[in-house]
Image 1 (tube, one colour):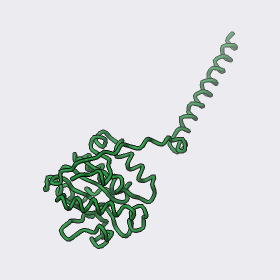
Image 2 (image 1 turned 90 degrees about the vertical axis):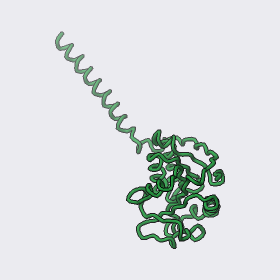
Image 3 (image 1 turned 135 degrees about the vertical axis):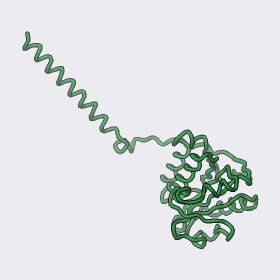
Image 4 (image 1 turned 135 degrees about the horizontal axis):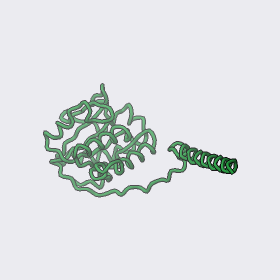
Length: 214
């Protein structure tokens, strides 16, 4: 009888280990790399028309430089829309701030949208609030709304728009002002800005440049 019970126990233990092994194997296989090709494409987010108070709004023109935008066909294709947005913001009296990298100068900006002498240029990497006076510049002018356009979308736009939302600014992102080395990077940026955290969701509005009214 004891031998019979020993056999039954051994079988049960083996079954448990085998089942556990299968579960463990399945769990190990279910990481994002293994499931990469099975990820379902999310629906495109809603774009909304917005009306802006230019007195409390800044347009951030991020890294539209000859050295990056100048080599990205999608970025260059956006220049007419960006010039129109820029002209509208200037005409309404909104604050305009450009950004570049460590040694960038205004002359490095794409010619059609280059800044005049009275519009500042800050220098940083992805997050334009980091190691710059950007937040102080905005607060000194009573800025409450930040419009963010630029290249690369998954760098400067994502991190600056996200940080602005976390700091309590209302963030407007025109999707026709975003570019990167590939479309997936832009898509990821757009998705992340409206899904990452409740602060992002409540603080970021997606639109297009021609849906913005000053």
